[in-house]
Every structure is written in C-alpha cells, then in structure tokens.
Image (tube, rainbow, N blue to C red; front, side, top):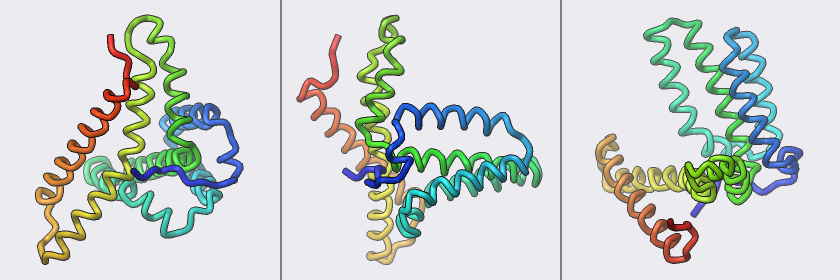
Length: 201
C-alpha cells in the first residue's frame, strides 16, 4: 500500500509530529478567522514556500496535489457563481493554504506518528468510556493510508478505459472504484481482527 510520507531530512521532517499537528490545527483556526484577501494571500504564499522546502519535485508535487486542486477549483467556482469574486478569492486562498499546510504535514509525518498522536489525544475520551483511543488512532491512520491508494486505483481504472477506447464517465469510474475500495477495506479489517489489533469489549 502506498503512503503519503516522503522520506527526507528537511527542518519540517525533524520537527516533532505533535508540534506539526498542533501547528496545523492552530493555522486552520487562524485561516478561518481571517477574511482579508491580502492577509490570506500572504498566508497562501507562506504555505507555498513551506511546501517547496520539502523538495518533492514538480512531478511528485503535482501527483500529490492534483485531486486537492480539482476540489479547490470546483469549490471556488461554485462560490464565484453564488457569492461573487471576493468570496471566491477568499475561499480559494483559505482552502489553498490549508491544502498546502496539510500536504506538508502528511509528507513529513509517518503513519505511525499520526496514530500515536491521535491515540494520545483521544485518551481523555477513553477515560470517560466514550471510545477506545487506540481504535480512533488506527482508523485515522488507515484513512490517511487509503488516500494515495484510492487515487492510484482511480488512475488505473481511467487508464483501462483509455486502453479499451471507452470514454471516461463518472459512473463507469465510480462504481469499480467503490467496489475495489470496499473490498480492500474488508481485507484490511479481516487482517486486523485476525491479529487481534482491535480491542474487543
């Protein structure tokens, strides 16, 4: 299974996973508090500079950001149609900054570190008997691991369409993609239960 983590020795790689996750949460709050296009533009530029320090290369960066960029463009166009240019620009800069910050964190933080930090953060809820912290951490870790896997499967299905001379349509792509993803989810869940990783009550 592929992963979003990119091995490296940049300052962001060396930063504590806890600091990165807390910083991302704080940055998210600040970005949604800001409404000035100028301030959001400065934030977007700073986020882009931070992402560029990872030295992923243009091809790797495009592969990572392409699905997010498509979503960003669609949301911005929707906002432009219903709320005007200023709101569309604000949404574009805000979500673009979040996209770059989140991509920087996922590229420099291993899945194991994510699981450990999320599990630790959920421990107070476990003490209240609301949930099991280890299961929450494992669930979020699996979601992060599945993102590149789903993108890879989408590309495989699209290439299969082109090879057969078929036109790529949302329905003909979505159905096999959902089936393959659910099948993998069942296989992973069975493997987890077989190893006794999830605690049963």
